[in-house]
Length: 125
Image 1: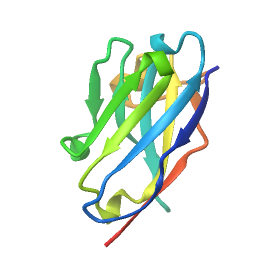
Image 2 (image 1 turned 30 degrees about the vertical axis):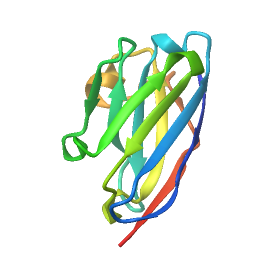
Image 3 (image 1 turned 60 degrees about the vertical axis):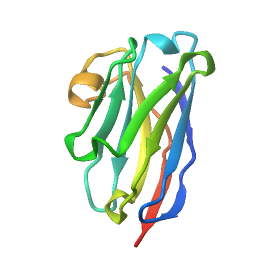
Image 4 (image 1 turned 90 degrees about the vertical axis):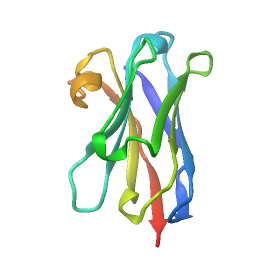
């Protein structure tokens, strides 16, 4: 499994920006499908964005244009740039890694995939 550690969360006012980072400890990091998920209080965890080994990306429709996923293979780090934040973006954000394309195609992390501990994002109005 890949060990993942998120950082970069915090409190911001509506309209502001944050960049989340997820450092992975795996020699084969560049071959994994990676993704960002979030879970708001009382709601189910939902997929936010995913990136494939080839750098292709996909986003949940409601977040397109505001969030950007990227990665730096040399640093084994995944990023999520979040702009124009809204109070409804308040949630715990998690990164995930899997060798299965299911993460990329369906925001589904099969058994054997890895999760970070999460980083809290709070957006105030």
